[in-house]
Image 1 (tube, rainbow, N blue to C red):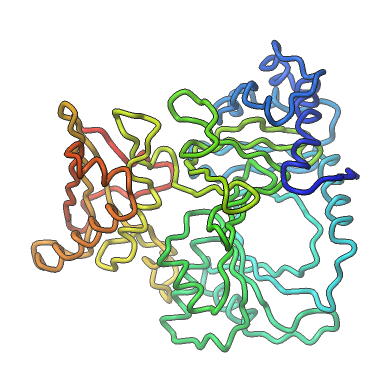
Image 2: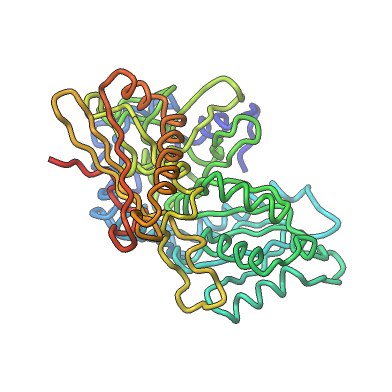
Length: 449
């Protein structure tokens, strides 16, 4: 095991980054070629990491097995979900799996509880076999993919267990974003009392959780929602802080922000997130300075560790055409502005589940675009309603005004552009079936000629 004499996330990262770079260069044909002009015999450290080339998703896809490190034995495969592009295959070795098991067994070895907590995991088979991590919890798996599973999920949530050493009730829900929202909506519609459950924490993955949904989940379940940022490609991720409301990343990975324009490091401000996996937690398929495609804002000062605020996918944020590193309207601000309005149409999900309100977990349907006339940026956002807008013109105007005010309140840079006469915002209401669905890999802001 690694004995560390300092505290903080950067301590472990500093201890492992040089070994990670040497390992990749010596064992992987892909990195040997990519790092051909780099000498890692001398320490690189965290400060030297920006000199290392960025790894793009397409690099991983093209390299294939050439990226894998020699001398290891395959344990299992994972894969990305493909929601942001063609799925990637991820290879994990017996050696790293064994190290992870030993490491976390030692970390948790001295921490024993009188009772094992019970967690209900709402699972979807999008990511292959996960890397097992020893934990002092008992996990039950279920879902809401069909009526039988939904009934089983509700049964488990209500059940009282009478087994020595095991908690009597399920105290946490984790896993699939869409299934958790559908389950919550189902319980609310059927007026199930919160007292029938004992949930204290909710951990969700897969999509951005809007402010409206976060408040609804916490109010209904009387539980704390723990926001977690993660990628299938990474072992590790970030957890939202209760003090600064930003994400702090696990010490098992290295986060960086770089400019979208020239990929230079950003220590404070908005940029695209790069993540680096660390040896020996990841051995067979290291990802070094991996371009996530996600936009964050990084601030320093309120907490001991830097705070990272998620802004959305790079493909779904509006960047200033006249200053390409400046985000004018983030995807999360736009979504949070539209989501509170039930009149905005959502796509149906769980089509074979007649007992569910199938639009509950769907994303609002809208289509943003922009055009440039000289130095004027004209932004247009079409929003699809559940009814023909001309039937309720006054109500539609109220909703569009509320959305507009929310966007301007959240998007300081865009508001300054509007106030200075450099930008204009047009909101257009359209009827049902007028627009394509918004998915994670959609390129939202289309330029109109």
